[in-house]
Image (cartoon, rainbow, N blue to C red; front, side, top):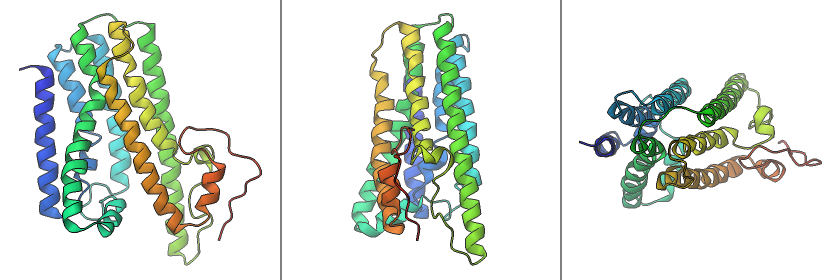
Length: 275
């Protein structure tokens, strides 16, 4: 059985499991719980089918493993693996905007099927490398790996800053004080409203670079995973920010002054009006 077929079968099993669990528990973040784990398995399958003898695939597996460990840790400390309280808060809001049958269709087609296929798709540059056959690692591979690690460090810093801010905010509220500011605007968040989103996407775009170094060809169909991931983040960001604006009127000032995703210098002369 080919490596890609095995990955498709694993993806189908995970998709079915996450969908059935969402029906049984009426909790819709099961895909989130495997998001950082499944890619390690998919890339590992390609490396395993190459007999762990392809240095480029082995390097890709190590990088995805590091990515997965970091993301799993961050998700776990926020309570993502807890039942009920670990559900993405946006699903509850979306359920309130949809009829029951509409949300169940959305759950099946988007949350379960589309997102699981996307998780597999972002890993498919490893399939291109697998098909290209074994070849030595070159300088370009080393550069790609270092850039991947730099993006990984950037996302780690952004998530840590967000974690510390929300812990501070929770302490302020517990003490009976009104937090000010009410959302994070410092550190990397001074240059991007969603630096963690940027670095997450950037890692998978640079991951595709291994398909180029393995084949010498710039464009492969396996680039589609990174493209679709960016499309997902664009939609997710728009939805998330609509919620933020409804909660914090001053968020509109932050939007006007700060880049949405790609880190850039904030617009001068614009102050965030706090409540």
